[in-house]
Amino acid sequence: MQDFKQHAMLPATTHDEQARQDFVGAFRGHLSGRLMPGTYQVFASRVEPAFKAKHGRAPADQEEVRKVMTQDSFYQFWSAMQRRSQEMLWESVIDPTERQLPELIERARKLSRKNRGTLRLDPELEIPRYHRAADIHLQPGGYHTDFTADDVAAGVVYDKGINLYMGGALGAENDLTGNTLLAYLREKHPDFKPKRILDVGCAIGNSTLVWARAFPKAKVHGIDVGAPVLRYAHARAAALGVDVDFSQQNGEHTDFPDGAFDLVLSHITLHETSRSALPRILGECRRLLRPGGLMLHLEIPRGRTPMEKFMHNWEAYNNNETFARFMTDIDLVAESVKGGFAAADVQIDQFAPKLDVSQMNYTEHFFWKILAGWKR
Amino acid sequence: MAARKGKRSAAKARATPSRSAKARTKKPRASKRAAAPSSAPPVQVARIAKGKKPLYFSDPAIDKLLWMTLTLMEELSVTRDRLDAVERLLDRKRVLRRADVEGYVPDPKAQLERNARRGAYVDRMMRAAQAEIAETTASGNSKVDDEALAAVSS
Image (cartoon, rainbow over all chains, first blue to last red; front, side, top):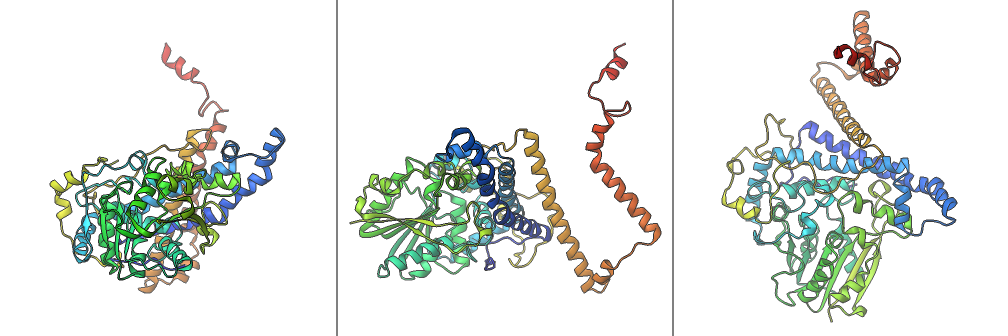
């Protein structure tokens, strides 16, 4: 595993703050690597047999699995600990962030001036309900809450937090998802050389920078609804020596003109939106593409069997990924058609990452799902 | 929990920049550890996420106990790391060798004191279970408060 890169926007840690983060990392590694596989074992050895004895058949869908698994003592214990580990993860990162917040904000201001890309914030932007109703991933305040003027706390917390979340699997600069989607593009469409690229729901720009580096002559934009993550993204990009434009916009309706981009992307973003927002975002992607332009969305897998589907939805019920509950049954091709794409121009692909079991929270196998659509 | 703000928070916040946000402190290197915190932070960041918290066990008290247990587990890990840091620093500064700690044998007086402290610690920890046994005797907790009620009723 690569060490996490200590760039200028990350807070320093005291001995005990670091030790807490180290504990959270070790604890979550144990939960994923050692305990989580046990949920499949108890399902196979006692939960499913009991269900079969009672009903004369196996559970037909994830809802039937949910009813019986949430009554199983081992599952309850793993699940409660997984939830607490997520809360502890944020606490361990918030402590050093809060302590150094004024100087982090000052550092962000200075670094932002070095980014030749612009930072456009829109205080009038309505934060979508799917952000306001529950804090996604249990990050207190979500992506959008300013705790003070020119706040960057949500970005700082998110950057180190997702490093701990995936046991370092996201890479030295949390760029695994960007690198994965880039690898997909290079493999499937090696001759596609975009000059104008948009990353929708970019948060701290961790995936956005991958594209700016891969296509140094391209103009790269990142948009998100959260102001504190964008301030952080802009400063972080400067700290890492990359120029990117960031603006606070809702991916359902942006202010970019028709056909403004060759490539429109998102990285594990769609499942954090809503039933009505999803086709609107896909429609907006289509509007923003020039004819011949490409849309690529990286999504997380949702499982094959009822038990896998149930486990993949752990976050939907326990980690405030509320919309993810519906994603299992949502047909992304049909949603793209609602957004104006021709069905023949859209496809879903699977792409395998290189992760070890301690980095996979809910299954022992994992395939990214990629939605690709051409504007003809 | 710190106050949550709505969609206009950025505008409001910008109109009234806080003193703390302007305060300048010496910039530490990201790779170096900062000094330990000494006072309350100028800005408070929320610690509790908005949204429904699931119940995992039949009794909500079990959820709370697990929360506390895992937090204790975390702090014990932190304390062991800190003790390790102290031992290694003392070793580096030649105040003691780590082998001295490994090879330490308490003298009889120290051994008695340690035994007493350890025993008291175990007693304190196990009092929750002991209390149930004590219910069977007149001197301990009881399931009913008849005697106490009678004592104050006349």
